[in-house]
Each structure stands twice: as structure tokens, then as C-alpha cells.
Image: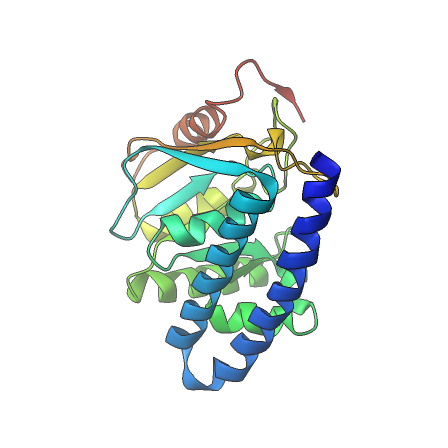
Length: 232
């Protein structure tokens, strides 16, 4: 059954995604606002396909921030990258720079206002990331970052990448950690499974903490749904 559901999901979601990217490219010259609407529509399309074709529901715990914040989320699958666009008001998402270079999609993503990060961490790349993040905050948008820097399997954790601490220090925003467990039902690979994905928004963490303190708190908070964890 999971295989059949996954085939149906692919047949519906991915052609719709091509249409969303095409529409985003068409409206991009009109400014960021129309692209944000297209992105939100794409995220809702993904939610519909996940719910009715894959049998995946979502459960939200905690308080979703409505004011600009640095939202630090666990990353186990593509599921949360789209669902957070719905849950948060027009967030700007930190993504790998390579994704912004994909033909078509990369241009649409830049028009959306994603924040590219070079995982090699050069000084120039970090400055570009900070500049883009400041512009997003000035526009009233929250910043979403996956601070472990890569997708991790359920039950694993990875050390935080330096880009998170740089954003925390530079932006001076409260950090809202988000734990989730999408990898159980929406793993890497073709076959997905029915079930419930929980998003747990933790209490805001105040700005101004030392790097070791904020990283320890965030790493523990975003892994709260994993139970005992092992290094990635």
C-alpha cells in the first residue's frame, strides 16, 4: 500500500511542482509578494498530496511565532521545508547555495527571498548570507534555518553549523526551536508512509547568550522528539 500511495503522490505532486515553478518565474518580475503567494500555494498543494495520497497528517504543539524570529528546526526530510512555509508567516529559509543554482527552481527560489549559505563557510559567503537575512528581517519576515546543516535520520543528531551562531549574534532575534519527526513517515527515498508528523515549537530563547549556551539549548530542543539519540 505504501508503494502505491507513493506512486500516486509522485504522479500528482511533481507535475504540480513544475507548474508552480513556472508560475513563480512568470510573476517574479512583479516583485516578491506574488512569488510568496505562489510558494504558499505550492506548499498547500504538497500538504494536500501528503494528506490525501500518502495519508500523512500533521500535529502542531507549542506557540507559532507571529513576529520575526530566528526559527531553528530539525531537518529530517523535504516535508518540513514546505510545511513551515504554511505554519509561519512568509518565512525566509536558509538553503544550500547549490539549490539556488538549479535551473528554473533556483531563480524562483531567489525571487522568493531564500537565504543562500555556502557550507564551506567562506567569509564572503557569510557576509552575503547576513546581508540577505538582515533584509528579510527588515521586511518583517522570520528566518528559518536548519542549524545542523543537513538532513539527519530519525534518532540521530549532528553538530550545529557555524552559520547559525553567526545569524543569532548578528540579528539579535529570539530563537524559536522546532522539533519534528518527519523522517519516520517521509524518509529519504521514494517510498513514504502514512502517519502523523509532529511539529513542536519550543519556548523562545532570548538573544545575547554565549555561543556554547545557545547551541546546547537549540541542539537539545530540536532533537526533543527523537528520544535517545546517537551522533549522525
